[in-house]
Image (tube, rainbow, N blue to C red; front, top):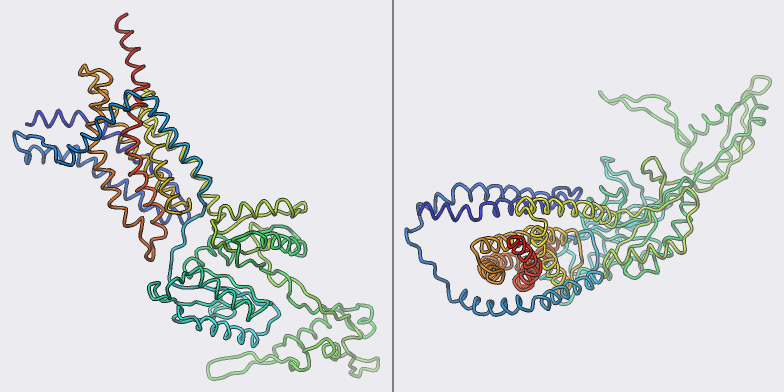
Length: 612
């Protein structure tokens, strides 16, 4: 018994060891993820790696010991009714496939081509939005709005939101918080609306429809106010990543604020023509009323004054000057004095501020400020955004009822065609789309490296480049299954779906390794190539289907779930279910003929070399 256990372990030790290493190598892209996607999927990759390491140690230490203690001396292998039925169904199909191997390979290539045609039809997004059960609405009002008028508008926003039965409660924040941690103006209002669970909503109502209804009414009742809809956690993450209080934004970078504003209006007008773009608006950088007082030095000198004297007077009259200190117990307060507001609320009144001077005979005289300075009112910079020591203006937008990738692609095409950027000005796409582009570039670099690493481990397993490449043959079929599943489910390609595809790499290669390992063992025992492949595929059919079906059954609830938090896991689970359901079928039917096309040639060459 011990000898049989030892022989059995030695038959698969190399394949199992390298299969585990290859599975870990397939997860290399997950280990390199950064930002939000790294925080979400990094722990999964590390847990998977630790679990594989523990399983590998147990396979070579604990499992043989337990087998020697628990397995009976004489064990008779008996197949169940289901397995026997599968063999009766699969073996004729396999024989037909091996005889008509070219036809089967063409059929397999056809499936891959079908997936290739479907890929452009899949939408693109960074990560599916987690449903938090709330609204975080940001309202941008005109910058010249007073605190009192802004409070009236804020109260009206709350009342509009509370009219909807799906809304439980609404809280608002007008201006900046008391602790000063989020610098803002009176023109900024943020509203937090808690929603009822979805099962308590009226039939047919969705969050997208509710968002559209609320947004339409808010814009109708409060003209001139721009609204942006997000969720509480989502909004904070997006602002921390992009530096802009919006789901998506275009940062127009350049030195001149007037030119930036003009370009932002052109970009906004072009994006307003793109289907799917909502919550479109410009974060204004101009609009702050400025009172310009330019002192005429010549006129001031006639009265024995200089610019500093006049400026000090203006500062005291308008902003106040500390006159004394007031003691109230142990506390001390500085007492500032200035003109009453009714004496400084217009240019005419400010022009009449009296400036003191000494006459030629030493007496005190007074002259209106308008005699010494030119006073004008214009608008200047109200808010200046900086990134990498460069000024920029954000154009915010959201995407609804359309995928992010195709929407932004259309917007980019229109902007590139119709908006001419002067020298020294450029555009940066920030927010979700910027994160998506960075993640895709990182995956485009890391995934090929991971595949090369897998190929190197396969070569170390077989010491044959041909066998190594054939072991990779299952990957396209697994990917085909994942693409078909995404298309049928109507889901977009996202980083979550990419993680699902990466997860399929290791499983597909592991199946390929074991298939070729069994084939090579049968060939060493003197079987013909046909018999060896029949034995390898038939032997691997049961464990391959068992592994695939267990994964499909385990992840199927996640693939169809609709509860809170399911948005991120659904694309991942859908890809794995599709890849593990369709991929193994193609692997069992198409890959053996494909391997026979090349392994058969290899065996003929070996036979000819032996005969010589």
